[in-house]
Length: 280
Image 1 (cartoon, rainbow, N blue to C red):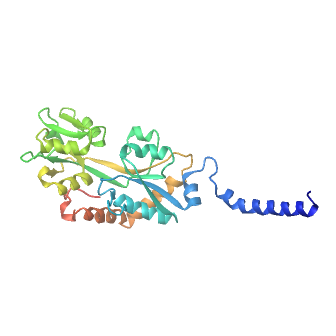
Image 2 (cartoon, one colour):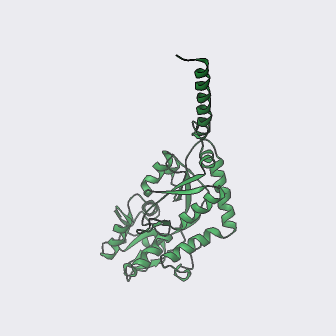
Image 3 (cartoon, rainbow, N blue to C red):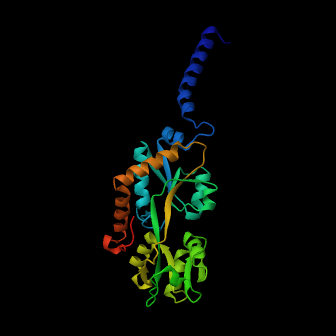
C-alpha cells in the first residue's frame, strides 16, 4: 500500500531523473540543424580523406594517421572554429554524396564543376591548379594548339576534370579515356598514348614517383582550374561565409602556399621541382 511518504519519495526520484536527463536533451540535434550550428554544438569538424592522393591526402599504413595539405587546412579550420578534426575515408566520386548525406561538413580539393554545383555549394578557390601533360620521351609539344591534332593520342581518366578539359580544349585530338589515373599514366609508359593530362599537383607526384614515365610539360597558353572546398546546402550561408573569410585570411598570411609546400616536401618534391610557370 502506497503511503503519502512513498508517493513523495517517488516524486522526488522522478524530478531528479528528469533533471539529469535535461542536459542530454539539450545536446541533441534539433531538426534542420545547419552545418555551422552543428560544428559549434558538437565541437567537431568532419572532413574526409582519400587514400593515395598525395599531396592532397595521405594515410600512413602503419599508424592510420592522415596528412596532406588538405588535412593541414582542415586542422587549421577546426582550430579556428574551436573544434576537433574528425576524418573519414572516402573517394572523389563519393565525396559529394558524403556532403549531401551530412556525413561530413566540408570536402577540400574539389573542382567546382556545374554538375557538382547542382547539389553542393563551393567556397572561394583554395588555389588555381594548372593543367599539365606528362609526355613520352621524344615528344615535347610547347602549346595546347600542337596537341589539338588527330595524330596526337592523349590519355585521361574518364569523367575527371582532365577528361572534361581535354574534350573542351582538344576536340581534334585522339582521346584515350581510361578508368583511373594510374591506367592513364600506364598508357603512356606502354606506348599506347603520347601523353597524359594531369593538374600540376598530381603530375609533380607522378613524375617524382616514376621519372621514367615521361617529362612534365606546362603547355602554353597557361590553362588553370580552380580548386575549392565543397559544403552542404543547408539554407544558411554562415558556415560557407566563415570558410571564405578563413581562406582569405590564410592566404594573406601565406599559409596556403606554406601548407602546399610542406606537404609536397613529404613526397620528395622540392621548390626547384615546380616549373617556373606555375604559381600556387
